[in-house]
Image (cartoon, rainbow over the protein chains, first blue to last red):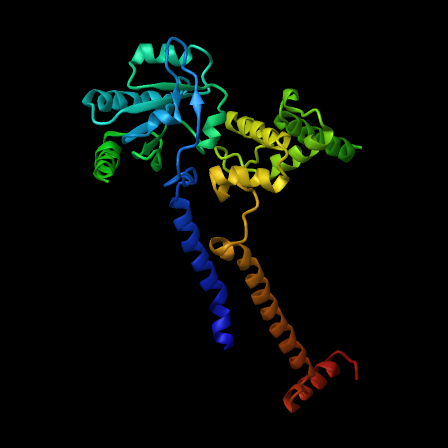
Length: 177
Length: 156
């Protein structure tokens, strides 16, 4: 009996070492979205400067769409931007944008300089709606189905791989529903 | 004197660090009772972009937005639990600084208790064995050795 107890601390140490080694590999910024399969939060955002139309939750129902949170202050959004332009030009899926925490005119200037991939853009200058969406950082992209439910959330840049391997197949599957 | 000034210095540094992390004066609520509740809630809610800081400790924009929501909910008449639930619904359990006790946190909460029982049990067995060992008689050889040692020291 006591022979085994001598080894217990070692066994405990090994178990903890394995546990922490696995834990260290996980990305702590990857917080699961609470919105999956839930209806979109109701909202009605004003347009950003220079645009006539804002964005409301009603605009996002009826077909499968992407909803992208961005900001002109956000470097990864600039990295992601050419990919969004490519998707928009291909016409495969409409992309709706929400300009997050930008001072007046900053989002418009940014889109003029880099191009506008968005069908419609809403202005979330206060960041209040971002909390309804559980946003932790831009860019974040939601896949929304015909019924206006959130089906998937992608945190971070949409790389060509993410588009080809995750988003596009998912959009095609959702269209079949 | 030296020690006193060192303590004073440490105190000043920690105080100034706290002062820096405090939300700006524009965020103080008119009702002191609500403000006191808000201050407690700020410490109980995690800033989701800063990992290990509460929204009361963080200067991040998102933390500031979350404090706005806390005040908004308090003004709307929510209880403290309802304010926490509001953000938990949007950001998940992660937003709570104190994880709730539930199936997937059982190990987290239970492990310290298990460890304490295990270590306590081990200590109990060890001490009891020591006690029992103390009660046993010396063998004749040990008695002879002890007598020899005592003679050597001139104790007998």
